[in-house]
Image (cartoon, rainbow, N blue to C red):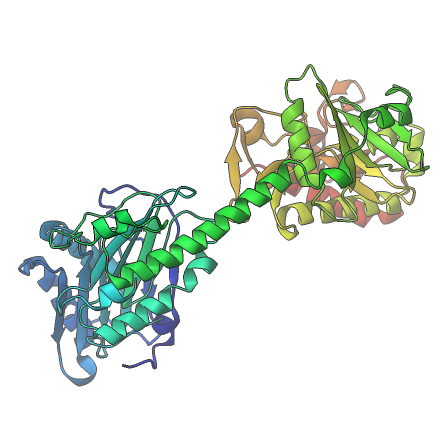
Length: 548
């Protein structure tokens, strides 16, 4: 057994989590190009590799799907092995290998060592010995297969989980002990790679494991189910269809891993529906009294946030969701789940909620200076915002967005970032508010699509407004509009340049091209910080710039 110089291949573990059918995919699922070195174009090493690969086009098919060839001497030696899944027909096997033979030199040009994987086969070559050598860079059943077949499948059935189907295979050149070692190396990787998935692969150069919620393999014709009656008689949850120890170990491992995760998901789902209701839920009448029966005196925006004061003396802001919108329930659920989990100095803090029949209330911390739009778009009040304050507000909004997009446990797209959804504290520290239209992303997702366009025109990215496509770029676009509004002290969708009605974005681009950026700077600002203002205008324009 050799675990040595090719660190990349020995340590490489490629994880793939996806759903696919039983049809053969002609595209490779992965490839690995070793760093052991390159050979020179036109060299004997290259000629030997091409000779070996081309020989697969005329090779005779066998029933066990494993092939190994070698040519050359000393440093010019090239060794090739190819392996197909144990349930694949010989003709499909050779077709897959021929695809791999064509693709591997394109994927890893001039490399002395490489490996490529497809759905049904893998192909590997090296200038060192690889036959009979374990390279660990599913369990005993595969290892105890005959000298020409180390392949096993199985499944478990459980009333809580969907059925789990698994497949494991080693290259037949490994000994039983080496195959077992390779598969046991793959198993512990599953929780790390597939923690939130219902299917996945762990691919190593000498073996691999795959599991899915749907059957993806064909039962080998030589397999038996002689022990199935014993399993049926037992009232235990695990029912291994193919009763061999190796698959049983994998199935038991997957069963307990997925079952534990399922229980955790159930608990988390319940918690997310209403998080700690005893600590977060306010009595409806208490909120009604605190806000003077939801007085309109201090209402902020559509849906409204009337200010109030609890009997304890704590000031609050209450969002009363619109009953006419038909979106109240969804908005309410989103805000309770998301906002209660977010902790950042530039995000508004949710104190709790209240429910009564069709009424849904969100209770926020009271933010002293209300929303940014009340300052920036008011000719008199915006004079209170000197450049230092506006620059501080821009930076705070940027930090809040960065937290939502990158630093929080969950990636969140706000989708309605605008001046009225930025609240200002007494010291003018900005807080992003109103997550009723936020869209939750897991950390490996980058974009989404919706048929229900929500948000505020003028702040929407074109691809979102027209096609419903949203991503972190949607919020970046809104942020760019907001920067330009803060610098100009004017609204985007109603910017009056003397006698011409022009939106702020067009006006900003025109001034930028003509070198007259100073024309769009708020006249209430001193021009002493012109370079900083110009830099912010530039950043705002970059945020709203279309791709060409």
